[in-house]
Amino acid sequence: MNTPAILTVILGLGLASVHASSCCEHQEESTDASTESIHQFDASWTDQHGKEFKLAELKGRPVLVTMGYATCKFACPRLAADLLAIERQLSPAERSQLAIVFVSIDPERDTPAAMKRFLDQYKVDHQRWHGLRGEEDAILELSVALGIRYRRVNDTDFAHSNVLTLLSPAGEILHRVEGLGADPTTMLAAIRTVLAPDEAPDSRP
Amino acid sequence: MKHAVLVLACVAGFARGEEAVGTSPVPPEMARVEGGEYLPMFGDRDQPRQVDPFLLDRLPVTNAEYLRFVRDHPKWRRSRVSRLLAAENYLAHWTGDLEPGPGAPADAPVVNVSWFAARAFLKARGKRLPTEDEWEFAARADADRADATRDPAFLARILAWYGKPNPPVLPAVSNAETDLRGVAGMHGLVWEWVRDFNNQTVTGAARNDASLDRSLFCAGGALSATDAANYAAFMRYAFRSSLEGNFTVTNLGFRGARDLETNINP
Image (cartoon, rainbow over all chains, first blue to last red; front, side, top):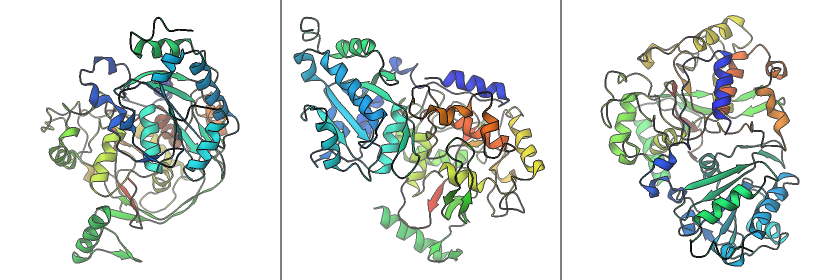
């Protein structure tokens, strides 16, 4: 995150007495994993099959999560491509343990059917990929927790930051990658670290 | 449940003879802000934006009010709060979980609270944070005018406050300047959270729109503002863009808002 730099800029502009605490530098010190989990967000979502979905259902498996919208013409197809690129480099055994969640920021148009069409374009495994539609407040809450910024810019488009986040099986934020087309090396390493130790080392392709 | 609470709140409001505007009662601690168009400052936001009428708390939330909240909601006490929801300086100026202490007088605005905490407090009261548009729209007012932002003296007063160091102990909210609607302390007391503080995509990662918002941070930022004179608003947008939802800041507090209708969406 650029926060310290941004704050430095602001302080340079003359803003007095601002002190901010970074979100991530203390996470590793946590001793109570459950309280740091995004599973605590109890909002109801709807998946691409039209079924109700709670984030707590992801408990027990690592999750790659991103936010965008299905009719996005530029960034979101590339976000999906980045997710697929990571997935392709995992072995079938590794892949089977990972859930992938694409959360829509456009609940008006991203109906379950629209999300299914979007995911079908990439021939994803619908058992492990979840395309979620939620209420505006649930979307905002999750976006803030994941450090994703967005806003509607016109009737059909949103500006949004492109962030892939790896969640632990307990729902803690383990790793983030910002930007499209990022080198997947660090994310792959983070995924393999969190996967079951007896599965990961010997099953790489 | 929300509806039940609101119905009760409405009944209680009328029973105390509150001002009623149309079909919506205005609780005594809130003021009605008439909507209208205004021009935000940056990037693609040069089209006038419509702000619907809404209710806004007359005062920022105080330490005393926040103490009652953490008494009733233990998960928001300093020692128990999730780091996902509030960083380690959450309520750091309080003496203890349930003791604000001398650094946090009862009638001073509560600060060092995260966006998640502010949201939870307001949700428990059937309120929500004001949107950035709502806050900025309301904050244009002074004691006499709904929009004082063309007055250099108004902007100079705000900037003079931005330039001052925080006092070691914040003053009482009742001492703050009140605008023509009866809303006090929008300037001169503390900075305030807004609901959609994360609506500016300022990181380099937002390649699809970064050019829209880099104007906030590049040297020419103020020149691309729709109202270059309103440097104070520029500062607020820049500040919000630096925040994350669990951040706590020594001079950042909040106040509540509410739709005129009963469909509260905290």
